[in-house]
Image (cartoon, rainbow, N blue to C red; front, side, top):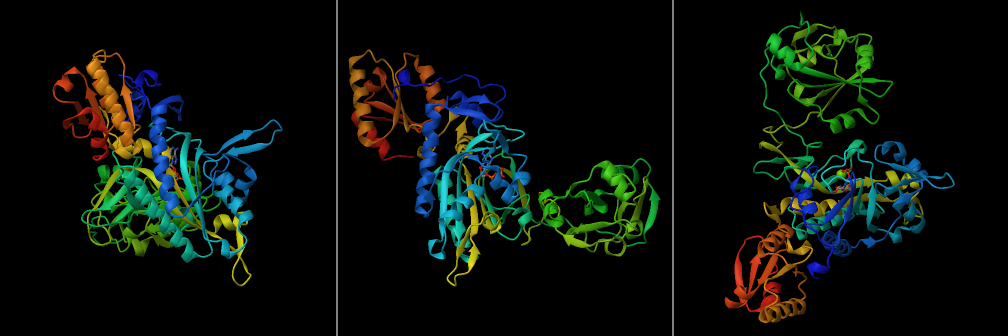
Length: 566
Ligand SMILES: Nc1ncnc2c1ncn2[C@@H]1O[C@H](COP(=O)(O)OP(=O)(O)O)[C@@H](O)[C@H]1O
Ligand SMILES: [Mg+2]
């Protein structure tokens, strides 16, 4: 491809709203253009890279035995009513109406559609297991689309769904997909961590996220120093440094204008770790208290699991009504909860603690000398805290919290969708059984941008060869010179012969401009030829990543690169 015939405009500056390097570079290198918030067009160069990512995904999915299908983005809401997700996923669902006033939803994912499809296709255990996949556009009404393709309203996903006759089979299918994911990310040039993830309110089954370490990532990952534990912040378990409490008797004391953990520390000298933090949740009917140590934060996903579906943080008025006091003076001291119907779930870290302070359910009063098991009304114990940097892992190692980009997610679903949508089959005894399912997503467009986020320098992108839009940028200078023209023809013939794809910068521009653009576009190799390089014995091949240069005879350029693909 010749630059002068391409649709390729590089930008010196990215629009100010592009906050992260990969987003800026995708715009500057002319890979994508914005249509609206969270909506992007792929230009030819960007699409070439995207197609290479897709190719890798298809090869690994096919190799793992998955079957490619293509399902509609426009979906009947009745399926979403059957699964219950018409409300559970309401925050991301786009609704549309046709001319007959009939309602549709735009698919944010395809569990409903694929399960309905398989309900019709599979009748017998002999037709299982099957894993289907597609690479297809998803729509999600993200409240805060940002970072370009990272969090978009319309994006490309590879989604796969496994159907098995039993739990054992489902686990095997899950392992096959997770194995394929490891290969996919490795081949695209990403060092993705396979992270234990939260399975949500459903519980039980397993889930893994694939996470690419990066400062700008929206996910938090907990790892162990010198160990193998890796989990998402939603799932991770750890122990904070122990505190020493002095046992004593329960004593109420006045704490006027104390509203927060910090207030009690500042005004009354009670360290945060010596306090019990009381959080109030409601499902509209019942009230539940979550207790954590004062220096800890409750973890939303763990709280959701501990309380079950339907609970949310109570509003101030609801708290006042249920507890008789306002936030800042709340607590679970049994004697103050008389007549109140609340369920209390305490974090495991509080077990056995003495000499703590907590609110008295009376504005302006707290208790000290609290002995957790003696004085508090506790219905259940659960791990509900968020792990912090420096906590201890189960094997006694130090935990670290870092950020990363979630590029993929695997989930053992069980029979939730097959039961709801009738994906049943007859087992060997002629008995009807629901298929055991798994679902597996890769953000294809997000993966492409993650590649750029981890492979760039101050001058531009540094594409891994496997997903570069082109392998080589051919930069010709002094084209009016007949010898240069002849050498250029030879270089390109040799690239074509070797099957190496290239973009030829044939523009009438200064060398400096061309070199800058070559660095910005960041193909693995730049071949420069002009009167000067020919005088030095051939064409100059430069590696974008290392900057190393070598002079090679024009006719050997293709072979040279083919043998050194990385
Ligand atoms: N808004 C989005 N924009 C781009 N990619 C997304 C978006 N939402 C999800 N993805 C990608 O699709 C994969 C599967 O999605 P899923 O796990 O269902 O999303 P979430 O973690 O947001 O619930 C994610 O791992 C991510 O790579
Ligand atoms: Mg996810």
